[in-house]
Image 1 (cartoon, rainbow, N blue to C red):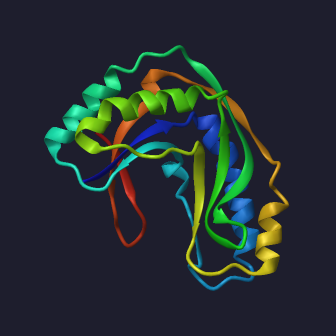
Image 2: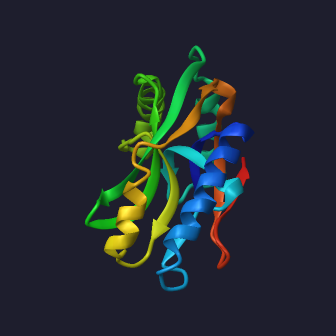
Length: 180
């Protein structure tokens, strides 16, 4: 199964981001072919700490046990700045930055260390994906995105209970995420 370790977002942060996402979607899709930009479904917003392309039930159980061993003091994160991957000339992902004074990176490093024996190591960039881009964007669309570069979306506190293993089932309508 496809799965990932995620930080679930509080409802109030999801609401703010979803409001902005719908505003940006309306602006970007005016001069775009149908389905050129796929925005993340409102309920699917999350921060990915680690992705697993194909795991079995035993591996999922082991990952869940590792997640339970995480112990850290709750810390504040700021959701701010709009960015893109891989670069502004070739956009494939539109994201919101996550600032945590390296606390989230420390949680990721602990997870990565505990998972590396069975699953290898991984890279991490603290961000929250809001859209995937399937075709080349116009200069006008790129300018619209970067008009929001310094946008602030609020902050929240991350606790160990917010870190979950989720199953990702791909469907023609989009992915369905289920807590494991």
